[in-house]
Image (tube, rainbow, N blue to C red):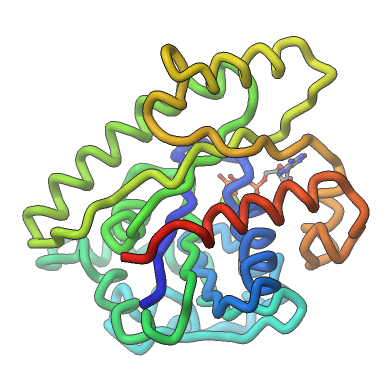
Length: 264
Ligand SMILES: Nc1ncnc2c1ncn2[C@@H]1O[C@H](COP(=O)(O)OP(=O)(O)OP(=O)(O)O)[C@@H](O)[C@H]1O
Ligand SMILES: [Mg+2]
């Protein structure tokens, strides 16, 4: 049964989508069957994987399964070697639409259940919010990967993320979801070793006494590079944009670390 990983941080622009597309690619390179899901109405992941969002009907996006309980729409993306459940701006209307719906919190979990056996990894790219769309993703997930920029002030977002996870764990019990929701790790992103501030932040995070490592593993830091934006704009993973870039090895090792964890 596929393991469901939510890439979550309510802070915006911390590389959730960048990690989802690149880790999806590297997991697929490891011969894993990968589904990536776009849970953000901004639809950055959908666009990055070359899907024409303007041509999508509601039922061809994640909006359909969540609001109307239609079948999960899946598009194959050959460049990345993954399947995608697309998003579109209409997803921003799901929250008011579901306001009075019983058990709305488990709608995504229910939508994923029939396809879990078809994949080894299901990665959910979350929107930068703690509201319903992220709650749906976290109710469906087995574990959470939390990207955070490698600057001290960026870590101010982490306590709120952890409070959200605690609230979700309680909600899961109310819905008789007994499987744990674990933290696969923190991923320091946009790391520049030339900056003293970044080096100090990373060292403190890795200190098991005082840092994030006391809560969950602090995984390998993803270097800062403008090539991430260029690969994003070119609709390819970084490895296909510049296979010699040092960040490619980091992404490959992060994918291997995610792949090594036991399945539920
Ligand atoms: N390691 C990196 N080095 C430099 N730029 C990066 C890196 N990772 C991501 N970026 C850039 O940072 C920007 C934000 O990345 P991304 O869209 O992946 O973040 P996000 O967390 O998904 O944002 P949102 O919260 O809006 O969904 C993009 O322009 C992306 O190209
Ligand atoms: Mg994003």
